[in-house]
Amino acid sequence: MSQHQTHSHHEPRKNWWQRNWKWFVPTGCLSLIAMVVLFVVFIFYSITSVMKQSTPYVDALEKATNNEYVIESLGEPIEQDGMLQGNISIQNNTGEANISIPLEGSKGSGTLYVVGRKYNGKWTYDKMTIYIDASNETIDLLE
Image (cartoon, rainbow, N blue to C red):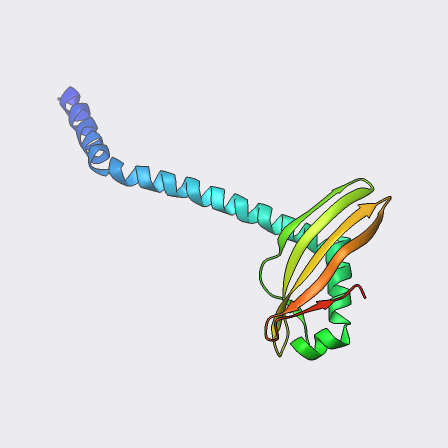
């Protein structure tokens, strides 16, 4: 009798697994995908925050938001709107940057492009321009 009980006790469990295993496979995959996505998002955010603290980003944003013509074209307040693109690599006292920063003001939007090099701890910029979407103009911020 007791043998019978343990037997019947095991049987439904196996059937339940046979009936439900299909649900476990996709869920397992999905949670794995979700973890990867979260990880990528985490990396993206940490890269973005590093970029935002970088000198080229700060310099360019300061130049753009203090430029009369840019203020006139985009309207205030001018804020970053959307994803930073490009890359910044810094090794000790040298580095290079090539980034584009989408900006949005009360009147319009534009994109800030920065290309620069760091040498002996100091950044020099080959390019710092802002493209105004509405007028298709490119304003040189280095002049």
